[in-house]
Length: 50
Image 1 (cartoon, rainbow, N blue to C red):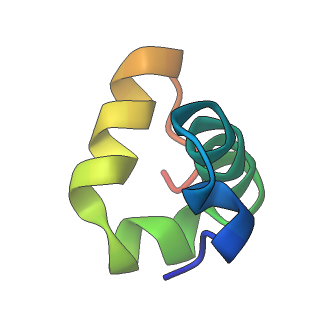
Image 2 (tube, rainbow, N blue to C red):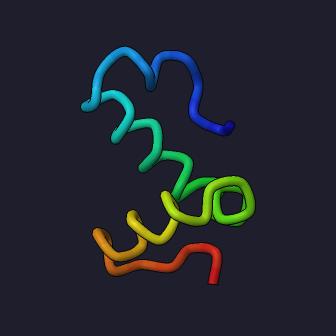
């Protein structure tokens, strides 16, 4: 998983870590967790891996 342990400390931190990975390592996130990637792509109306 790309999201580090700090992301598991609270829902807010999970969202922050997932968002960082989405924008900085979108290709990896898409490969490892396509459902999370799709949720973030819909939320931000962005497709950094595309």
